Image (cartoon, rainbow, N blue to C red; front, side, top):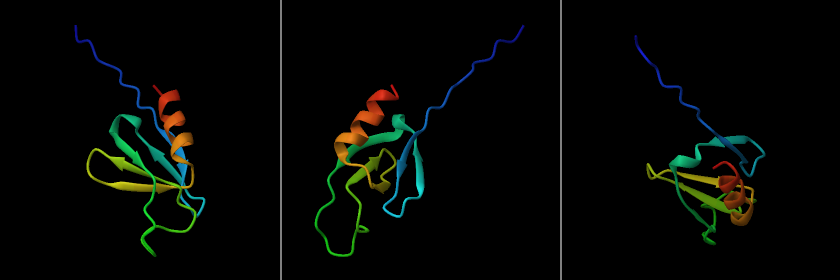
Length: 75
């Protein structure tokens, strides 16, 4: 008899500055950072940078406080 494991992947929805939907696995989030005021680096409307464990970055329209709450709610 073979027993299988069922894995559930929870993705949290965020929005890019353009309004595009971004789905992020909260288990892969390393940290949240406020965007630095580097002219032209982040799109206007980016309020939080989500740093991923693989070294990637996602600029989102949500504030870091709202992003942190969404990630906590997903746990």
